[in-house]
Structure formats: C-alpha cells, structure tokens
Image 1 (cartoon, helix red, strand yellow):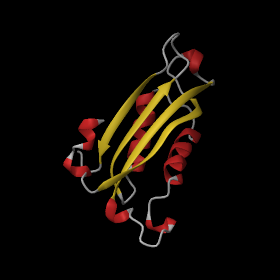
Image 2 (cartoon, helix red, strand yellow; image 1 turned 90 degrees about the horizontal axis):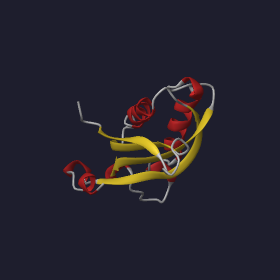
Image 3 (tube, one colour; image 1 turned 180 degrees about the vertical axis):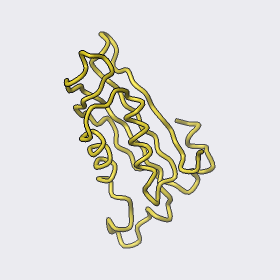
Length: 132
C-alpha cells in the first residue's frame, strides 16, 4: 500500500474505506461451488478528490456517502452467480470509478473457508480512473 500512497495522482485525495466486510456470495468456478453461498471478506478503498469530499457545513451532501460503496457491492452480488473473484473485483472497481469524485479504487476479495490453515485466498485490484 505504501506505493499507492506516494502516487502523485492521490496527492489531493482522501480514502473512503470499507474494511473486513463479511458477505455471503454465490461465487466459484467449480461445480461444488455453484448454488452454494460462500463467505467472502471484502476490503474496498475509494480515493476521492478532496475538492469533492471536504465538508464546509458538516453535511453529508458535501462528501461521498459511505453507503455508495456498500450499495455497489450489494448490487453486483445480487446479479447472481460469479465464477471468479477476479470478475467480482473488476466489476465492483469499474462501477465505483463511475462516481464523479473517484480518482482510484482498491478492491480485495478473499474466500475464507477454502484451504485448511489459510486465513484467506483471493485477489486485489488497484485501478485509476485515468488508466487505459
């Protein structure tokens, strides 16, 4: 994460984050995973412009509402089965970057019950709005 914080594109940003959110998801590529809800641990960081997230009147309308992140994730999970965690994090990242204040996003997904003696297996993506 240190590399992310020194990226000059984030100089005038704050990070809104959702940490260690446990959700049940219909996810998995193998036949024994289809139709079975699995526990996922999600972490999301949405980097937004300070100019669009610094309150003057201490009002919610002046910032990006945290519920926005949860709503995007919930909406994607409600669309049905996802084969790959890579697909899930890509879809969530793309939708979060549609927000006009978004500069960058980091999305991580972990399956927590796959391997014995392993806390989680998963993927993480970091994407900037201006990336090709």
